[in-house]
Length: 94
Image 1 (tube, one colour):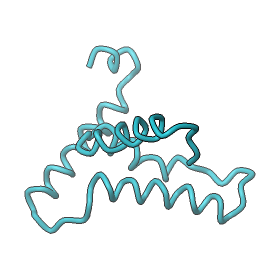
Image 2: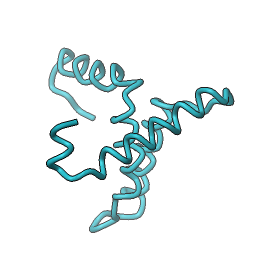
Image 3: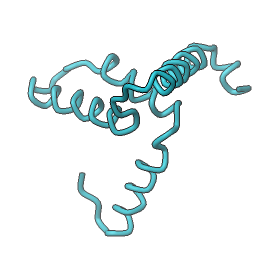
Image 4: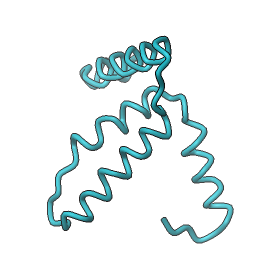
């Protein structure tokens, strides 16, 4: 990622990391690899994009063994999936 100024880089990093516990962002990242298609990209380019999303997901939801955290993550994912599937009319009201 190339950004023209240090301020722009810091602003970008702030946005990336301040959403660390945002279930909607986690769901968005989770769905990303399933929506991607190779298209005109080479296999390595496609792999890099999928891997980047998986790495970002790991940053937001690192591997844990605590059952309570696993349950919370699962519930957040289920709620996010439900809300994302609602009609656009209902989504604007949520």
